[in-house]
Length: 107
Image (cartoon, rainbow, N blue to C red; front, side):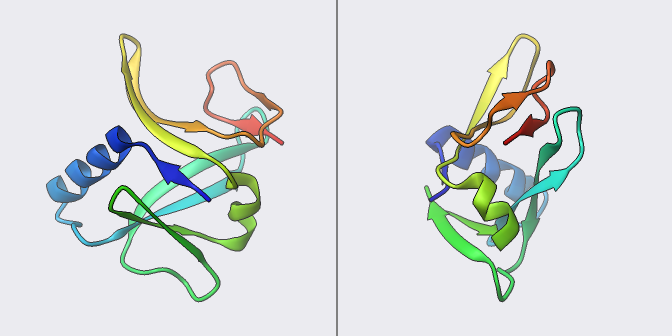
């Protein structure tokens, strides 16, 4: 299962409203690239694909393709704001390492 914290869900709703994308789900993907091998990708999508796993967390529909799902199982997504910036933070129990900037990971 993949979950969004309440703060992350509120930020997703805020972005969806600002972009006129209310009612759409959030696509979560793991893509190849970055210094450690993989990185995360998030974007809005109207509906799940035929093979997607779907989750609901704090009122947000999440769509995950089967390949990405194996890397994201048990992940909690939070939204953080710090002095150095803000963004979505993936607390993924499956990773074995990350790059120095934290934007990519390895399993």
